[in-house]
Length: 347
Image (cartoon, rainbow, N blue to C red; front, side, top):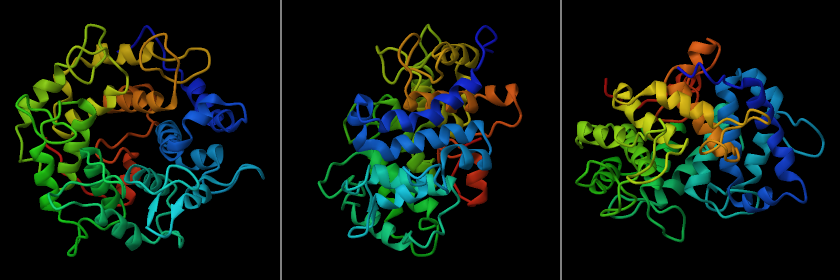
């Protein structure tokens, strides 16, 4: 698979490790327009590098637990600068309002850094913040402003699970009701949307199936019908799109393959063609992966492209030292195993 185009390991490592200095530059347009989601950007960077490098190498190269220089704090210290102690959640950047999206990214970063026991992390207070956003119908708002989306259902369950607050005798949320809401967002075509009646979309489907996996509720929908909808997203180029009549995009290598991995049906797509598509989306000069061939690389597609290659086993065939990605938690599998995290999978 992908014999015509190599995997540019060294260039991707260089791209990821140099990204922070580029975004922090005073005249950086990209840094300005992505300021609000920096927490997720840091997570994508760390998680991508964590597939390619060992824990020790990631720490040393990214300044995860110890600052690389005097001008920038360690990533872990920066994460806690984004914590809102008044509500218990994390914002997308320093001084930003707490939100479920960035709370999950913050917790994922701390999990990668092996710092979930940091004395600055009040797990119960974070759990209270997450629980406060569950609505009467089982859905979750992203923050106090009330937007409802199945993305937030996944974020809530994943955050609580990573913190050890989900699978215990006294859960902080109504897990069954959360699962019922997610199932109510299922459509006639087998897919899921962001709210009941919304169009099926591959990104939302990952969030819904991920949430149901964490809720141990994978028996509540037609897995075969959903898998058919997902495998029909493969285009002539070999790439996957997010919904009918759209172009292929590298990010769906994660959103779709993760679900097919959970459902035990990765072999329902042509992995050879998908590997080739992802490899053709690489920047062979500066590193990084774009949404499609000849477009500009970004860290979002770099992470999800690497995840796709991992889920198909392509990276492990190139080098056994590559770490694998967990399809439910979007964390290296060794991190999931270290934390003894649980999820439901179909085989």
